[in-house]
Amino acid sequence: MALGNNNITTSLVNTELSSPYTNDILVKNLCAHANAGNIASFLGPGTLAVDASKNVYWVAPVSDYKLGDFRGYNASATAPSASNNFTQNWGPGGSSVNMSLTSLPQSMNLFFIDSGATRIYYKAYLLSGTPGRAAETSLYDSQLSTVLTSAVTPLAGHTRTQTTKPQHPHIQVFSNFDTSGLDTPNDYVYMDTFFADTGGNRVVNFGNAIANGYTTITMHEYQNPQILSSGLGPTPFPAGYTTIYTVIASTSGSCLDDSPIAYGGSIGGTNITFYVGMHGIYSTTTRNVAATNFRIRITYDGSTKDVNTGTLSSSTKKYVSTTLPGGKTWAYDKDATITIVSCTYGSYITCP
Image (cartoon, rainbow, N blue to C red; front, side):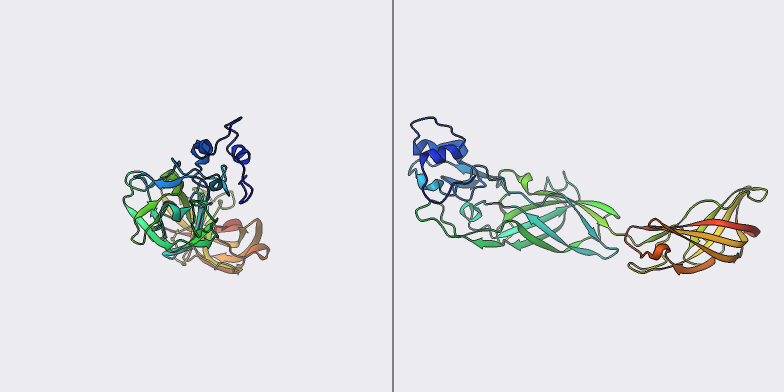
C-alpha cells in the first residue's frame, strides 16, 4: 500500500520496499534501492526519464537524499497501459463509428517526465507486424487528442512538484473512426497509444515498454437481419426428381434463387416479407415447381409460425407478408428461416 503524506519513518519506508534492510536503515540506501523506482508511482525519490524508444525508466538520486520524497510513494503501483483488448460493434452499414478508449495512466507523473506530453495519440493499423503497428507503417487511421488531467496539490519540499496528472482512468472518444476499409462482418484493428507533443511526436510511452500502449480491437459489423431457406420439400418427391428444396428471394422471378437475403423487415420491427418458391432437381436440369395447399413455417429466435399460402405458381414465387412468430421483433445478427411444411406438387418450368 502507498505511504502516507505525513509521519514518514525509515522503518515504514523499509517495509514499503519489502524490507531490504534489517538494521542500520539509511535514507541514502533507501533512496537508491531498486524497489524505490516504481515508475507508476506519482511520488517517490529520484527522477523519471525516457530512453531512445520513449520507454520510461527511473533514475536514482546520487545526492540530496530526502526521506520526505517517500511521502505518497507506492511500491506496488501497477504499470500504465492502454485499453484492454475489446470488441467494437458498428453498423449495419455506414463508414465510421465513435469508439470509447479507456487508458490507464495510473499515477504516472507524466509532466515530471516531459512537460510537453500534452497530447495522447491513437494510431490504428490493420496489421500487427511489419508492415503494421510494430513497424509503425501503413497507418490506417489516427487521432491526436488533448490529455485529460486532474489537479493535484504538490507536497512542500518534495522533489516532484507537479500540479497536474492524467485522469485515471483516461476515457477518450475516438471520433469518426474509419470503418470503410474493414472486412466484414469481422476484422482486427491494432491500436498503438502513447503520449505525444502538439506535433504528434512520441515523447512518453505507457510505462517501460512500447507494448504497454498496444490494444487489439475486434471490429464487428452488425448485419441486417437475414431470411434463410431451410429444408427439403415433403416426400415422396414426384417421379424423376432427385430433390425439391425451398428457395426465397426479394423479387418474384420464377428461377431466381438469391437466398439468403437481408430483406423482409427493419430492426425493432415485427413484420416479415419475402418471396418463396420451390426448386427441383430433375435429371440434369433445375425446375421451378408449382404446388397447391402450400404451407410454410417461419422460425425465428426460438419461436415458430406456420403460414398457409394456398397455391404456388411455377411462373412466379409467392409473396408472403406477415409478422414474426411469438410476437418477436427483428434484432441484429438473428436469422429467420423458411421451411416447407406441406404441399401437393404441381406443374413446373425448367430453369435456364
